[in-house]
Image (cartoon, rainbow, N blue to C red):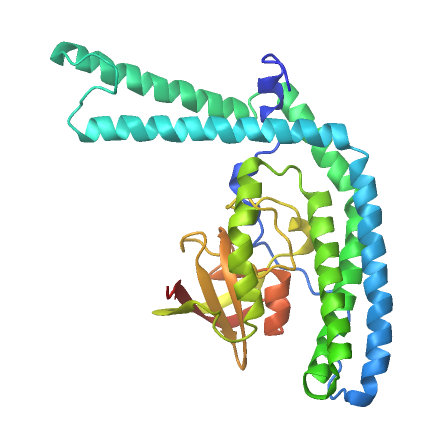
Length: 351
C-alpha cells in the first residue's frame, strides 16, 4: 500500500469519476471493416466459416499480444488502482458528509449525532459541520489533481496507455472484421445451417467477446472495487439484453416513455475508459449513454426495421441535440456509422 505521504500524490491518477462519455459523444469515427455482403446463401457458409475462423484467430492473437504488453506495466497499474480506490473512498466520505449536513439542516438545524444539543451550541455545530464539508471537499480536490506529483503520475499512466494504442487499434480493427463475417454467417445459419455449424458460430462469438474483454482490460487505466461491483451488477441484465436480439428482453416491458432523436456511438478511443457506473467501456457489450435516465435503465432502440436493447451505464452524449450514445455493438446491430435517427423506448422490469 502507499504511504500516507504518497497518497495525495497519487490520488489524482485516474480522475475516474467523470465517466467515459464526458467526451465519448464527440464526433463518432467511421466504422472499420467491410460492410456485410448481401444475398449470402448456404453455399457461402463454408467460405464464411473459414474466413471467420482466420479473422477470429487474428483478433484473439492481437488481443493476447496487447494484454502481454499491458502486463509489463503491472507495478504502475497496481499503483493507479490503489490511488483510484482512494479517490472513490474520498468521494464517498464527501457524499456521506454532505448528506449528514443536509439532513441536519432539513430538521431545523438539529445537531449531528453525538454533538451538543444546547441551542447556543447548535450554531457552532452547523458551522463545524459546514467546515467538515469544506475539508472533505478539499480532500476530493486533492484527489482530483491538485498535486504536482499526482499530475506526473497521471501523465505516466496516460503515456503508457498511449503507447499501447497502435496495438489496440489493430486488435479492434481485427475484431470489427471478424464481427462483420460473424454477422453474415449467422444470417445464413439462421435458415440453412446444421446444429454443428451453429455451435461453431456460438464459439466464434464467445472467442470474440473474450478478445474484446481482454482489450478493454488492457486499456483501462484502473478498475476499482466500484467498477468491479458495477460489472458484476450489470452482468445478469446484459445477459438478458444481449440474448433478446431485436425483441424486448425477457422480464422487461415498455413503460410508455418514448424518445426520438439522433444517436451516435462510442469510438475506439474510449475503450477501457470508466463509464459513469464505474465499469470500463467494452465496445462489444450492449451498453449506452444517456444524460438523465437512471443508470441501470434498459432501453429498446429502433432504427427503421432494426432494433436492439441496451443498458444505460454512462452519461452523454453532449454534442448537439443527440439523445443517446450506443456502444459499437449497438450501432452495428442498428446498421449505422456516424449518427442515425432512432426511437428509444424506456423499459422497466415486469417482475
